[in-house]
Image 1 (cartoon, rainbow, N blue to C red):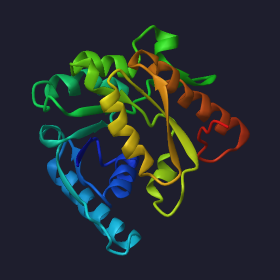
Image 2 (cartoon, helix red, strand yellow; image 1 turned 90 degrees about the vertical axis):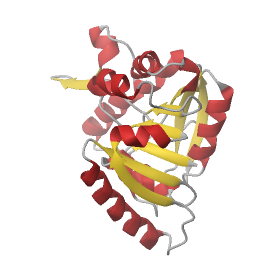
Image 3 (cartoon, rainbow, N blue to C red; image 1 turned 45 degrees about the horizontal axis):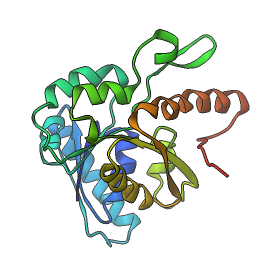
Image 4 (cartoon, one colour; image 1 turned 180 degrees about the horizontal axis):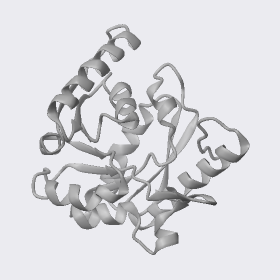
Amino acid sequence: MKIGIVGGTGGMGEGFALRWSQKHDIIVGSREAQKAKEAADNYTKAAKEAFSGAMSGSISGDENFAVAKGADVLILSIPYEFIGDTCAKMSGQIRNDCIVVSPIVPMTRNDNGFIYIPLEQGKKPAAELVAEGLPPRSRIVSAFHTISEVKLKNVGQSLDADTFICGDDQGAVATLTGLVSEISGLRPVYLGPLSLSYQAEILTPMLLNAARRNKMKNPGVKLT
């Protein structure tokens, strides 16, 4: 499977690339193709070292919109405020059968702590904006909102956490569920249709506020 990561040179992109490159071909994206290629080279070295060379997949890099064209699954690892512009530029370039994944959390920080932008400012959840920008809605799935990028990058560590998945198409949800299950210690939990994505997105500022005030490092969510 070809997995493209738009904004793949950040911490989440690195973690996904390392974890999934054992079995899949990963294409790391950046606004600058050279930056993406350099990151992909570094990720490849790290993955080969971590897996003792046992990789059936690969990691390459390219400009963000070139990455979008060839992907079977496309992860949008971008800030909330970039959704409109990014989707507008990618619209029409993505294959019709490509599954688009939003791990995006609309949040900011004020004097009280981290806040969820749609609740505080009356704006739309991230998954809804992605669905509007990259129709059809059925191919959009949301997940990975509460995953620690520090833990994700440490491929020797089991995450011991859950991630909530939202989506309208059960085939797309099933594909992503399979990918989630390949990440050690990460359990996929289906939350419901895409319209419920806000319930997963809003957990991230809550976790960060709890971690900051209670001196917790890299917290996650696990249902018991």
